Length: 162
Image (tube, rainbow, N blue to C red; front, side, top):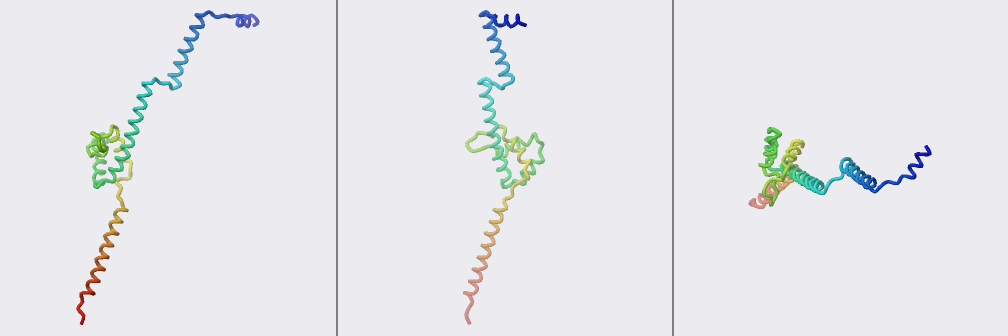
């Protein structure tokens, strides 16, 4: 064992051995970095950022689309029609309805219609705004009461005195 430690201590590598050792370590580092550590090139990072942005925009548009769809005037009818369609035709139905096309846009947001159809069909159905219905009922009731009150006032005022 003494001879091995002496050889190790006295070993002096050549310049070529140093060069190839460094090149080998660079290659191993790159293989491990790109293969297992998740390193990416600038182009791949840019593509991933653009894809992530597009997906986020589509998700936001789909959420807005769902709200617009479920609160539309004819939501019950549209919801039933959408439910009768196959999953493959729902995207076209949503796009044709204009729920994924927003102001100042030439066409629908890419990917939003499919997500919107999934969100709509996963919901409990159209939103019926009971607050608006209740408010309009109370306005109508108060108008009717005001009319009754004015009828009573006019009937007592218009009575001829005997």
